[in-house]
Amino acid sequence: MKLSDINYRRHILENEKVMYLIVGVLTTLVNYILYFICRTNFGADRVILNTAVSWFGAVLFAFVTNRRFVFRSHGGNFSDLLRQVFQFYASRGASGLLELAIMYIFVELAGISDVLVKIAASIIIVILNYFLSKAIFRKRKESSIR
Image (cartoon, helix red, strand yellow):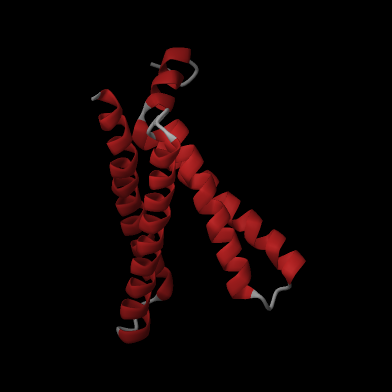
């Protein structure tokens, strides 16, 4: 099969893991774009505010795109949607705290290179977020079958 083959491209875009990586790259871009928009509007000295706003927006983007394009979770009532939003933000918040802990322990306490630790932590967090997201969106699909 060649990449130019329409069926092969469709197969790739229907692959959950491939779509998760594509959405992850786009989410990172959204985060950076929002950060620099906030930096321009709120000021470079407002790092925490800029980071918080860009994180919130990026997670919202990740929620919508993961729900729609990666895990293809549709339907349900408003309370199901709110539950998914809450669980998604909570899981991303928890994984964000885990990343902070990893950075603190291995960079600040153990003295390992921040670049190496950041790369390793990112890999761990991406994998963790995939499984957490899958659990959040799969619950809805399974409960809608009943």
